[in-house]
Length: 197
Image (tube, rainbow, N blue to C red; front, top):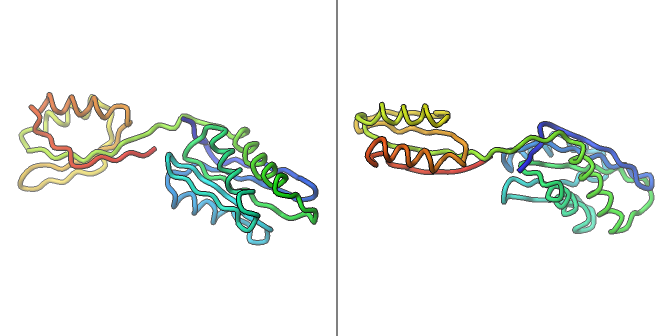
């Protein structure tokens, strides 16, 4: 799956209405809404938007007739097969009504052109693991982690042992679990797992 390498934009004029699409990579719904807040123009007629982050998506027509702006923007995101992306299409009304079909084509077309022109990179899904193990297994666990190219994000020690938080590529999780199981005779406990990108 691809995502954007950075922000991108495109402009379209249809019957004197000006449409400006702005897109950016985002990692969470909060980041998508922050991007909307950053680029929306309060002086514009409409600031319509959509985002997709894995299975999470939302869109808004921002006052345009229902289904004529947000959904076409989301369809453009899906049509370009990008993920972890927010797109805002801002419209300045030019005095001529476009009709529902015209709005769908304008919003969807401007968003699609913006995404088509954007530089893209591979989106690598990562996973977060929390492990718990006794002090006797610390050396074996650290050796397994060094071989697996993981990032340690947190480490706590208490009287019973060590709790460790890790981030690694999602496609390497099962191999790491098997390695830890073999290296410690199945004494490492997995507390939780989550994934993102």
